[in-house]
Length: 123
Image (cartoon, rainbow, N blue to C red; front, side):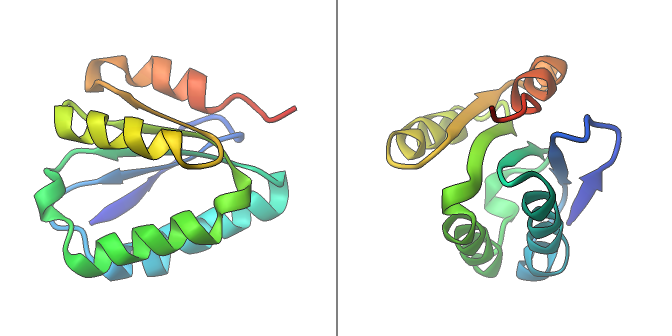
């Protein structure tokens, strides 16, 4: 499931994934919250804390995540992924080379650094 993290700067929309993540988590929470954020800010600063293994994202969740990425393509500014998984880090580095905005993986122990980095407003 995905829950919204509320105690972050207003220049960041943040979520935590735990247990099994399904399509409705993105469809009913992430995508609407991102839409509200980008409507207000005209850019997207995003953070996803992975407190579950990526294998717990079902196919529908991955498809909705992809839809989010494409739908907000022009708005991406900074995206922090919190994970200790080296595969997530490697995939994010590849994705960062082919997309607009900056994507960066931080270890769980560095979450405060991630929040500071990802919440920087777009000039």
